[in-house]
Amino acid sequence: MHGFLLFNVKFPIYTFIIWFMEIKDYKPFKVKLNDISYKYSFINHERKIARAILFDDEGYFYFVNVTRNDEFGKCSLIETSGGGVKRNETYRKALKRELKEELGAEVKIICYLGEVIDFYNLIHRKNLNHYFLCKVNNFKENNLTNDEINKFHLKTLKVKYDEAIDLYKKYMFTKLGRLLYNREMIPLLAIKDFKK
Image (cartoon, rainbow, N blue to C red):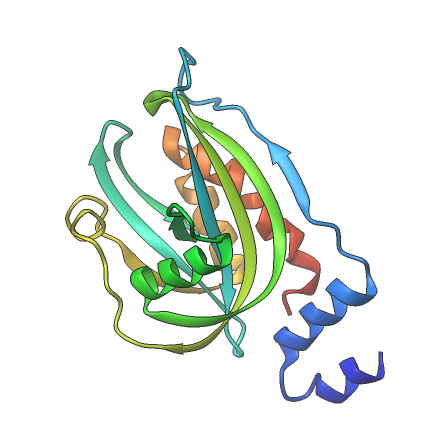
């Protein structure tokens, strides 16, 4: 506890999160969610995904805004940054790569938060989403893929915690937005008590 009080002045978010994880014996979550938006027919592939709840020293959180018009419909959404894990790549390595590509962020991974398994019935996919709590070290230029630029129109969102929750609620009235809301509220609520 002394270490927490000593460092609380300089790094309020970072040290409180570390204190919570160490002192309160945080246990990573593992949740399985069914797709309630699209009818199930079959699942023929799975994707391993590393995702970040990313914050900075000023209490801001970073997400991506996705604007798409594809088989999921026309919609604008908020989503945690992250992406697919390549063959022979660890979740942590994939996460750092994805955060550099999507946000231009170099980060420190604070801890593993947990796993949400969900399904995209429309494209017959099972998603193994592994969430990590990360702190921004600095930002450089991002390196988006052609699909991220032209198909998904990815943009960085810098918001306070409550604003992020409000955006997820705003976009949950689309079928895909509802899937993202259900999945991403789990890690966001897991950090609620120690976000300040």
